[in-house]
Image 1 (cartoon, rainbow, N blue to C red):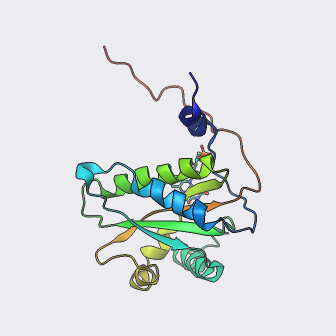
Image 2: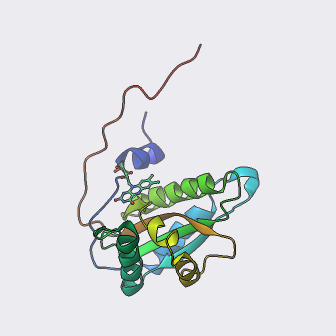
Image 3: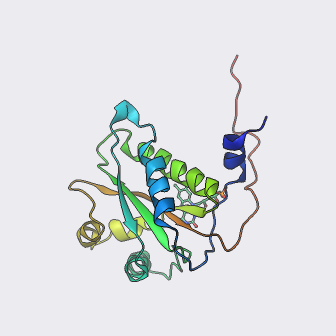
Length: 174
Ligand SMILES: Cc1cc2nc3c(=O)[nH]c(=O)nc-3n(C[C@H](O)[C@H](O)[C@H](O)COP(=O)(O)O)c2cc1C
């Protein structure tokens, strides 16, 4: 079976190389529209999206990640010109899962627009370390929110193979 949604799901890749060119405002708006149209448990819409297009600020977060991991984490944003940080109140039973679903909506929307993306857990180390308060405020996370996940977006400067699918991850119960 094939249609545009199935093709987007099949063809999306985690992109780890980007052109310097910034995405357009229209593209960013389309990504955010896709994000807020995500389903969420009890329609709580528990997420907040912090859009960062400032390379120096991303560099500061990257440095903090390396510091808190006690190793050079490399370029955790893969030189992407735009990174969306999703935060939520972790007390919500499904809040982080809802954020994950929103991140995938963004990834598929980005792919449909000819953009690349990669979902990122690595930034977590900046938001859970000793300066978490500072970074929460810097990214304007609402009170009580903490980092859930991030997604880097930009014009792709490379691609990759589809990930190998594990054959034993589905059971049919009869
Ligand atoms: C919750 C989550 C966190 C991830 N964190 C990172 C990350 O910090 N850095 C990174 O390069 N890729 C990250 N990835 C991307 C995965 O490595 C990638 O999805 C996986 O290797 C499969 O490749 P594909 O997305 O191209 O199919 C993350 C993906 C998910 C879903």
